[in-house]
Image: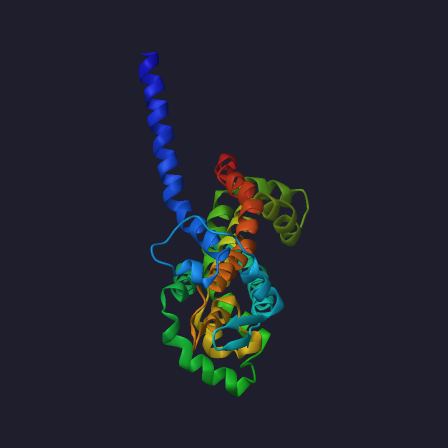
Length: 285
């Protein structure tokens, strides 16, 4: 019996290792590519033995890319800052609008509430190309084209349905009796929402905010059409590495590493909230 248990543990460990390797290998390969020159990456046959270099990262940080056709100015760090501004701004706005709305949908049933909630969710179903033309025309008329505020407003339309539906589920898992007891003690609805509901649903709100941030960070098509070069995020700015002299694979790999670093760091920091969110159902009466 002991030998069987030992064999099961070994097999489980091997299977887990294979899964980790399968999912982590692309990231490892991108990191290795970012430490190589284009000549090393394109050599045939490929080899994992090479002399690492940081020139790809230096080119991104300095904003000057050396190619066979000459020097090329790139604004990757500016694009990275644009991604931070757009993603943080859109998630913050979506949280301000979505969390109270999620609480209202969870606690107050009214005629058409499900239809309204599903209509908001349907924004996630619609392809971006379907709304690009009217958005472009409206933004030009309103003076919102090529502005941070206009882009943040569009980005929050991506984040809002996600936050609304995820946070609504967490609020529904909180027992209404807890809030009722606090209301009976003489506290207002706003105080109950702020001091009882929000802290209990905190892990769920953090998880929804993290997922919304990732969706906003990875968005491509809206910024490509509605923003000029000085306001485009990294997803659009990466097009600068496709030059007339060829594709700069090393710089692209370095850009990928730098662009996923913020979302990876945020995910590692917020993982405890994801775990805590699983226990919210324990308070349900």
